[in-house]
Length: 458
Image (spheres, rainbow, N blue to C red):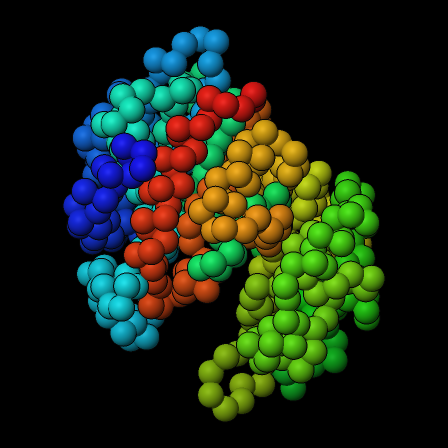
């Protein structure tokens, strides 16, 4: 047994108690009333890094919710620098009435921790600090130089972190990043995520007359903004489901046959998935499987539509305006800002006469891809194979971690997922949970990673 294994075992009760203390801080980044709680969580993380034996820990201002930094830089200038990433902000707990337990009072039942943030990402994030502590307290040093970056705004898209990292790129410079904000396939199977999607957002407003109008007195003589909006939105796809926005697919890298075969070989019960979602059939881009559409093809979704009368009964008006929110999940090589521009151009061309449109767009996250052959992925595969007793699956996900693109642009480093959550753990939903088994497994995984990083060439 390695010395760090004994350390983890001897302190396991303390580590679990610390996680519970961490979870009790309602660090909800989306809600202004919890801004001070996000800062309290940052201070908690900074102090926990200090106790682990790491150096230069500090809470850094970003213009929004803070970032916590720490390092250990004694391996030598000829050794690579590895950065560990995670986030300490959480999603809102609403709707509270659907929780079986208090969301910010962790409850342990049958080996499962129930609480907001237990899985995403406080449980996983803390395993990386515990792993570093265990190595320092037993081995006494690391084989590589280490930096730590934990943020408090991931759940709202990390809006300040692009400029923040550009302004602090020397401080965060590294050769590779391991993210404690990540997933495994199941309790008995692991995975390495090779790609995450980017994100582009657009809000569309269609305006007609100066005010709502009586539909009898004014009907038949003007364009109805709600009907115009419906026509615009319907023009974004053809009848088969293919996105027809000019330029949308220009930069998309088509998957190789080998990549498609790898995806097809991963277990997937499509019929069970259909029943779980309670839909009569799947729909999407022709020529691709359900999983390929979700993992490796870009998407366009209408997230909300509003306008006109919404109350009970009937109100015979022609509304003066109508609105919609659109988001696109993007794949490797697509530029979010370019996609926003393409959407605006398409909408302008397809706006019916008689109304005016205004648009607010934002490219908020760059898509991310890292090949399986990256040395950091090879090491992750080795460790995950030992931990789970079988090789990990290579997957891609439809979700986004905005900071992965910010890191790539600011310092040129790739991010490798090395987290311990499962997609089934009610992430972002009521009754979020995290198995204690995976909390302990993550600690061991980070010890193995930190012990072996010196063996690879980055």
